[in-house]
Each structure stands twice: as C-alpha cells, then as structure tokens.
Length: 300
Image 1 (cartoon, rainbow, N blue to C red):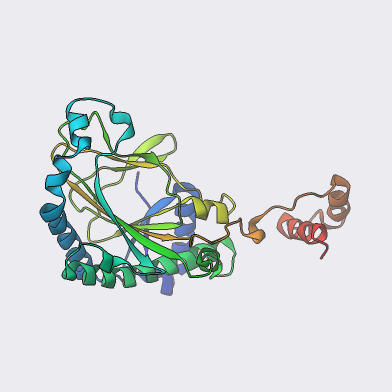
Image 2 (cartoon, helix red, strand yellow):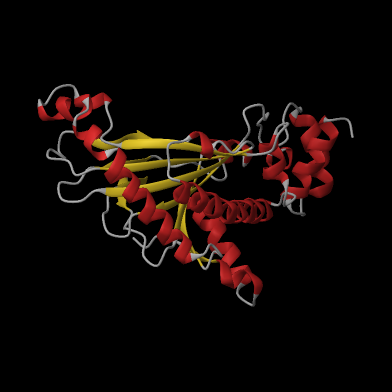
C-alpha cells in the first residue's frame, strides 16, 4: 500500500491541479501522507537528528533503562498502560521556551532554525487544505490563532531497543488532539503504524528527509469531518532504537474551534420550505441549493 507522496515542487507548475487533487485524496481517505521538496534544508534536518540522538545517549538513555517502565516490562507486569518511550517536549510558539530546556546551545540553535523553516511548511499545508475545502486560504490559521497565534510545539521521542516487544507498545493507539503534525523520523528503524481500512499500515523509515504528515482531531472538526484524524501507534523493536521528532501546528489554548460554516449542511428548516426552493431549482446543482437554504434559515 503506497502512502501518498506530495511533491511541493509541483505546486507551482503544470501539475498543480493533479498535486492538489492528490493532497485532497490523502487528507480525505488516509489522514496521513508524505511530502518531499518541502523547502526545509536537508543538512539542517540531518543535524537535528544527529544532535537529538547525541543528547539522548548522553542524558537520557541510562536513566530510561533504570526506570520503572523497564522494570515493569522485564517483570511482565501491567504493561497495558505504559509506553516504551523516552521523551521531552519543546514549546516554540507563541512563546519560545527552548532556552528553558537542558539542551546544548548547539541543539537549541539548530532546533530553532529547523522550526522556523518547518512552520512555513505547516502554514503552506494549512493554506492548501483550505483551498481544497473551498475555504479562504487563511481560515485554518485564523481559527488556530486565538489571541496569540497558533501554538507550535515538538515532542522529541526515542523508542529504545526493547527486550520484550511482544509485551509493550512504544506508544499506545491514539489520534492526535491538535491540528497538523509534521514528523521528522528515523531513516533506519521502523515502528510507526496507522490504521486504515480495517488494518494496520506500516510506515517505513523516512528516506531522503521526506516529512511525514498527519492531521489531528481539530482539523477533523474544522473540516466538518471531511479530513479525519487517524488512529496510530508505535511498535517496539528488539534490535533498533527509533527516533521521532514530531512538531505540532495546533490551535492556541483559547482558540474557539468549530466546523467552518461553509462546510456545514443547512439545518433547522421544514421540508415544506425545502420543497418550495426545490421546485424552482430541481434541475440545477444541489450545492447552491443547500447554500440558499442556509441563507434562508439564517434570515439572509
């Protein structure tokens, strides 16, 4: 099952309409896809991965293997409510709190530069999704902004080698709460799986620094269910330690989220009212008829 690949370089040329259609299909039928030629510097992406792996090995690996999580799994006790992961979280927007972390100065500066480029990709994706949904291109950004602008944060995770992968997930089954998730992941070790059409789809390691994208619950609400969030999980591995750097382009905490009015069906009208409009528009497209009903109901 080939995961949709969106080539950003085709958005400016003759293949734009085909690329937009593929993106719409990916959002509507999959809830996840990959993007290439996205404009984020590939050397920078490699540097982020290298420095994060170094930080984990120097500051996190030993404490993880001495943790209660590991003891629980080794004793085969109560593994259904834990995740085999070693993580930390960084806030970038609306307030950048990366300097409050214990990361090296080099990693902080590298991550800041990476996030600056990645936010542009997230904003571009939000505009493209809105265009495909027939909304104003800045609808999602404005809906996510609240009083301070969209919230952007990164969950950095390592899924260490696990002696008993049959006993524990790296991360249990879930959908993401927020908006657009952009994942810089391991190029060697697999483990990420998404649920589609009744079965789990293995997401292969990312080659050539493609970015893996999935949509969260708030995109599903904003799109009135057109773009659904998808259940996913991370499996553990006996032989490899997997890296995951997931950046969330989310609504601010005070953002008021609702389906885009343009995507809602008309409601709270009588059938008699509908038939009256239908009698004069029967042989026309139903879309404009629904829009007319919405205006009638709203007194316009």
